[in-house]
Image (cartoon, rainbow, N blue to C red; front, side):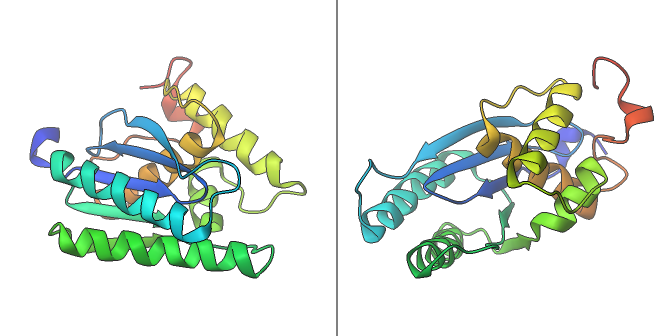
Length: 178
């Protein structure tokens, strides 16, 4: 099966700065981010921004699968409501745009697959390990949000299309990635 016959997969690390990664299994993902409002924006403003960005993107891109990093380690009610609300917005927009395959990805499961560790002492240690792996693969995410989305994308490719997914194991990626 050629990579063009495989479905386009969109991965999202939803937060105030939402990291995005998209591509077909076996290809290099394209990464970018959406800033959901300015400092001081309300939760409804940020959620509407996500709704607008995602709806516009899906109208053009047409992925078949959307994978969302599931919320965890919540720091207060406002953060919890934003993250859970963001997942709901993504699911609703996906359904409205005809994407019926939406997956929630556990960050620890993704990291266990992508960097061979699921827990880190400091939050940024996990993010740094994910960024380093992305760079070793020859991917060029611009920041942790994009790197996290790329890791979620890689996990989804491996989970759904293991024969076609890009290898992330150290012995198989070589010095310049794949």
